[in-house]
Every structure is written in C-alpha cells, then in structure tokens.
Image (tube, rainbow, N blue to C red):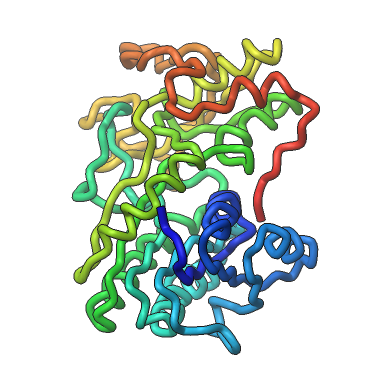
Length: 337
C-alpha cells in the first residue's frame, strides 16, 4: 500500500479518480488538478482530503502546481459526445505531453487509456491482448474517444523515451462502484425506462470494481518503465451487457430494453457475422438497430447464436455491488464529473 508519497491525480472528481484519490489521501499527500468550473466539485474533492488545484490540460496552465510528485495518476479525459476531434486531441493527447513534461521528475506515471482503442473483432468472445490491432471503436455515444485515446497513448510513449520517465499505460475495461460507472449508467436507464444502447450482441466486458482498481494501482505504478509498459486493466470475469441488464431487471422487476446497434468489426465484418461477410452499405458502418431481450443473446436470423458466458450473479465478480445498489432504488448514483 502506498504511504507517505506525494501523488498527483488528474480529474480527481471523476468516476474512477475520485474514490481512488479519496483512498490514497488517507496515507499520502494527494493533489488533484482539474479546471474546477463547478465549485461543488472542488468542495467535494477538498472534503476528501485532496489538495485541489485549478489548472487546464488543454492549455498547459499548471501555474503554482508543484513538479516534485513521486507518482502521477493521469485519469482525466475529454469526453463530450460530439465531433470536436481537435479539442479531444488537444486535451487527451497534447495535454498528456504538457503534463508529463511538467512532472518529468516523477518516479512513475500511470496514464489511463481505454479498451476502446482496440479495433473491433468479428468474434464477440475475442480476448483482446495488448498487441491486437488498434482502431476506431465506433463509439455510439462519444465518436472522438477512441481516436483521441490512441493519440494519447502515442504521446505518452514518446514522453517516456524523451523525458526518461517510467510510464505505464493502462487500458481500462468497464469500471464500476459506488461512484458510478457503465453498469450504474445502465441501471439508471433501466430504472428510468430508457433503452440501453450497445454495439454488439453479446456486448462483452470484464468489469472491475473500484476497490480492485485501488488494490492494483500500486502494482501498475511498479510496472512503469522506459519505454512505456502497456497493459489491459479489467476484472476476472467476462460478462455481457445483455446479461447484467437482465439481472438488473430481475432485481428491479422491470423489463430492460437493450437495443443493439451493430458496428463494423475489423476487416469489414460485424460482430455477429462471419469475417467474410460483405460490408454494410451504410457509410457510417452501422447495420441498423434491433432490440434484444436483456437476458438472452439475439442474433441475426441466418447466424447461429453466439455461445453464452456464465450467468451473471453477484458472486460472478469479485467485488460486485450491483445487487445492493439495485435493491436501493431510491439511492442516487453519483456519476462523476
């Protein structure tokens, strides 16, 4: 466990960063940098024992920020849901260079990336390795995200070599916990009667709880190196969004509406078709929408159903909190900022 260290966390009010910064602040001097345009966000961070510092990754405004941190956890990211690629690259890629230049004396830097950097594969149960092809993941809610994160990785790798600073790039899968995350978003949508939009059927993930993220952070920092180390960061159990939505429906008594909008996978195949299938004529790469039951895998009529992963229940993830959260429907889910 990290103790007595001086640590910088970027985006400290965020869904992953906030609980991590809170826990680290119990035995370390933790600083958090963000724009803090919302005073309530700053107050929340400071109440957790984190030293809040206003700065801007996009402009490199780090005035007054120390440069003698033992460790840097770069968790901040730009996600707007729009098509401003310039701003996404400015914050996620250029901002990473400006930050690492400022903190070049640190012993190690963890740069949070995402599994969205991988080019989609035709096999829905493909186990992604760090050497798999990268590419646009065709995000349904944030088109700029995967491209800007691939760019961020390239910048972080260059900084490790140029500044001789040990870097580990961690490609986060699906995080969740009391502070929100993908599973909590889906539960919110089910409770409010909104459809849950996914890209594939089955839409496979390996969720990781915030407790495990904290438990593994020190080891990841220890893996930082020059040139940079790249790792996937995920939980132990594969599960589909369709399955966890089905389980949430059982807990809440509500029927989840999971809508699949398939995207083209690597080499022009959709996730539920064979690699040799023709490309969709849709220039955006979508094959249209269809609804699937939250507790089953619905495939195209001419394609055999994909094999199911084990049923998702509270004990199928090491740190599951879904059951408790779904039973407390009046408990607001903090979504991070």
